[in-house]
Image 1 (tube, rainbow, N blue to C red):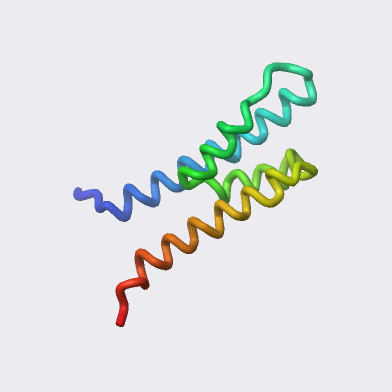
Image 2: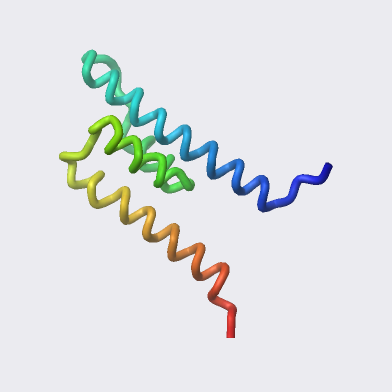
Length: 95
């Protein structure tokens, strides 16, 4: 059985979005308990590396970071940039 690059890409995206979603939930739980928190740069890094949909879903599912302008604006901005990159890569060279 051969695994294509597309299969690996989908697996990666599924995994990074799952990780970003779970990380948001863990950070929310830790915030409620007053424990050590996940650094914001980790949350943004996960989003920037393809987990923006999972991070956004986690934000609103767990009601976490939804009052922070940096997240309310930043996470969708990362997603928009990622969508733009995909559109440019797939449709940019069409004539």
